[in-house]
Image (tube, rainbow, N blue to C red):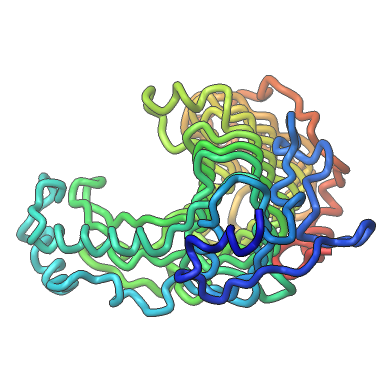
Length: 431
């Protein structure tokens, strides 16, 4: 396909989109054309993960704006493509007000659904379109359309240099195969229009949308040397309304709806609450598509100052090895053991503050076996299952996940992990 033909249908939409130069010369080490190494986690299973490494020169783009990025994604066809991201690409550069429909007013929303008058027995799903909730829904739909970007099959998205990334964006890797995402800093999307649910728990709660990246029903996905953070909008700075935190963040990475063969390596996940979800429901309606799938590997990642879900697992065979977990006083747990999960957690290092027990590393949500071996906490070898069962006997865990990971490259001893991960993980450190 010639470059002119490929762009003809979307030329009017292209902002900051340029065709790249020639392909890498033989022997030249171009990170944009690197593929997942053999045996490097579940994404190496079967056909492996090559992303857009074989892209013709006409399908290599450099983008500097959100419109340009979406235009590069929209170029027709599933032939390999490479999208190089230069600088920080802001998906919400015009701010939240740009998404609000006429008539939406947050103060009116608070007045209408104050539990003192609305109560906690009725949710807002039946509210009409011209109500405060209806106007919130319409505004949220506009943001949803704006900040989500659908990633095609056979694509590599890679940051150029040390300061490339996305702000307020949500990558949707949905129903496709063979995607690579590398060397990018993601500042978590801020939901401009969280929904109040009076019936969520005893006191109601605010619920938000938008993950930085969603792997939804997709296969062979490699996320490498990225940084995920809340950036300028940490939860600690959020206000409270109706006595509950005005939550404007969802997750940093979700792997859901039958997604399979995912490797996340050398990333940083920091300063977030609900971080990584693997399998989004216990319900039988989703279980049918999740059983036998949701296989993922996490290695050499830094999980720092997180509250929970690093990761929380349902159904999948998930291998978590050679990661460093650094907790603060807000720490709830790292590994969520969920329905029919088969988690293997080995050779990880944990740095916990004084007063936080290693028993909190594992959290039992459902009856499922887990393997946890060769891990170290604050420099000492610790049997995470044994300490959990001793201190939290009401949530006794069964050892032995029932499978042995074979898709691993070099496995480092847990004592070496903090130094290795500290020097090598995150965006801007790709070699």
